[in-house]
Length: 208
Length: 313
Image (tube, rainbow over all chains, first blue to last red):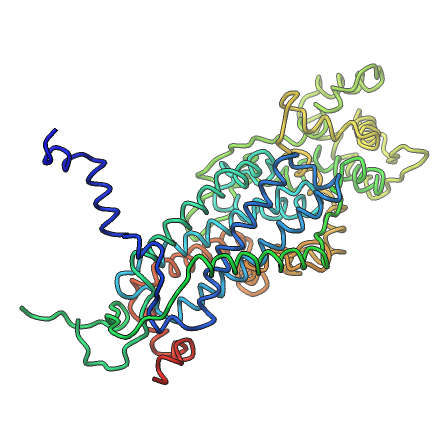
């Protein structure tokens, strides 16, 4: 096989493209620009950390099924871990979002980074909601019977039935976690490819 | 070759300053440990709420009058579900967003017939009840106008309904089989059999609680419990949960619209709130592309606080 032929392979071309866009020193950097020095940056990594705990505790809850946490004190504690990691996740995510807004973090070709972050936020809200209506307790009964009116009014209730426990649970533990994880992965990779947005240049005469 | 003008809200200057050491793995590990410890501490000190689910059995035993009244409303077609419209039935067209009838266009995809699904079919599943079977046969063989006349007569007497010796008593003489049907449905509910009949309507295995939840929501018992826990819509209930817990605090903006006019006074409040939230979400998503809005962070200068060390230098 000639070198030219190898170079034309999809695998070779993909590897070169990935290596060009995301070399190891960008994927796992050991330095960062000096301006990356603020507590606000903590909330991005805190969101990621909370997401890992949310998924880990959700996996533990799924081992014995959706009713286990009502019947076992250990299960109830794992549910508490799941709840509070979700609260921390959203708290950190919202501060991260506001921080990025005030940094104008979409500048410099980072529009997709902003958008993937927003879509992750929307998917997470839906994941949280489907979790609340899958609790199989009074909260899930009340929240679902109230929320149905909103989604039914949009026509969405015809395919997304919040009163159907099986459907909500499957969205909560399969579809939405997959979406949230995939979106988060793309978002983080975009951050690594594009780097952290630099501060606003207050000299208006600068050109690029 | 001409240089493209620098757009301060779109372009970012190239960083030509220095770099600092950055251990991304160490940072991630520390974050995981700190968030993990915080999660454990919050769980140990505050736990999580778990108020037991309300069953139809519990409802019918706690408030048999409310249950029987709701059953009568289901037969009369005056319950919330009976008059709901899409996706459950054709009784209404659903809410409208301006000229758009989104619910109507989506259609009736989860058909619910309250008379049949909530009353008649569950009663038909009851074995060895000769009097009940006789009254069910009387109901099913009557014309719809006769059925309507019986139910109207019964509903007129509902305000005088009493619950005596485990039976629903309504002072009426022209309600045909309705008194027997409502009383038997109440007995069935109080025994717990109706809970099972409502969920297994579609077969042995099920995970769909649409019917029992709609039936429960048609009564006042569930709403009363929710009001006691400050969970109703006017109490910002969508984002709350039982007990003193943060709930879905991130839904504050969604819940906020329900508290103010014109939303709070509109018969199309739900679709208006959803429309507003969809529009705002689109604005957030496409913010980098919207002139004016994308300039806000540069103009309010909060970034000087975030990068204060940089600007001090």
